[in-house]
Length: 397
Image 1 (cartoon, rainbow, N blue to C red):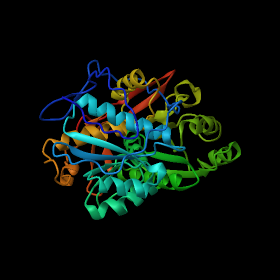
Image 2 (image 1 turned 90 degrees about the vertical axis):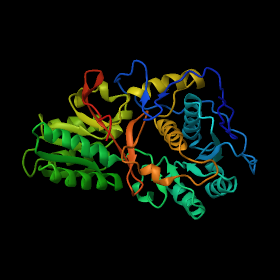
Image 3 (image 1 turned 60 degrees about the vertical axis):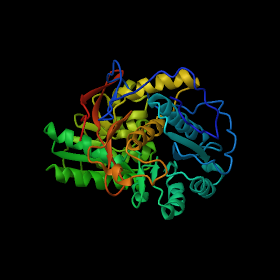
Image 4 (image 1 turned 30 degrees about the vertical axis):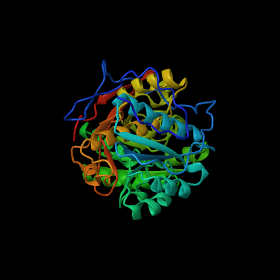
């Protein structure tokens, strides 16, 4: 079968079509030979040498054999690296699944998101995958919604979800909920937190308070910091002002965790379990940092992603952005839905909220009625030079 991947913005090498995924006809579950949990590869640096793709030509010809899907990503400008990585991932997924009934066209949001969205609708696309940034999602939704075209966005901003907008991005609150629940299952009931000033810290605090209450624990203290050594030191000295705690959430990226952990040990507690968020999954330095050894964090599994990343490097000669897995998974989802979708008819939005969900590189996920994705997460422990899974992600909902 010929794969219809109409990437008008980019030339794609379509050789070496080794199948990454085998699809079961009834379940759409993914299988890979030799699948195993692996050490996360850390953050992926921006690929170098990315060329600017040619512009999309206006007006696509009539096509009665293929579902038309629009991909809205930045293919030029400062975010072109991640945009190109997402586009490459969708092409790989189309080839791997041999999706002969799908035709995908890319539109460059860096040249104007409203123009990209308008062109996508005018060209007859029935589903929009993307955009990347939350403000672009809002602008796109204002154009797509009146046309009845749903959006599968790569953002994790829950504020833009709903009313035909579905977000694929990993939601930070879900990783906090997961690791807190796991800590409670290990007998820990008194929690503290160190969070950065700003919106992320506020949301992390709210999530922690709610989840600890739900699992029958107590939040002893929450302290904020400004991401500098002096502020971190002052915050950690205040952590145990209301008593001792058994676990402390360090709600920031891996580099800040490495910086803050010694202050926690010196000023607050030498024995409390340090907990992290899914931001830690992309930090290549954590595994080698003694200060965070023994810490737990929750994130999506990297087992399938590792194999995908290796294949991506073989094809494109550079590492993918970690976020590109969302592009791959968006195609897997679309291929599954397309089995019962008549060409030319509106996208069957009701299938997106199938309670059984979907499975992809990042594991099992599903959409709630409010458009927010729910993911099955695993808990990992940082050990000497490695991350080890201590509580695997569920395989199904």
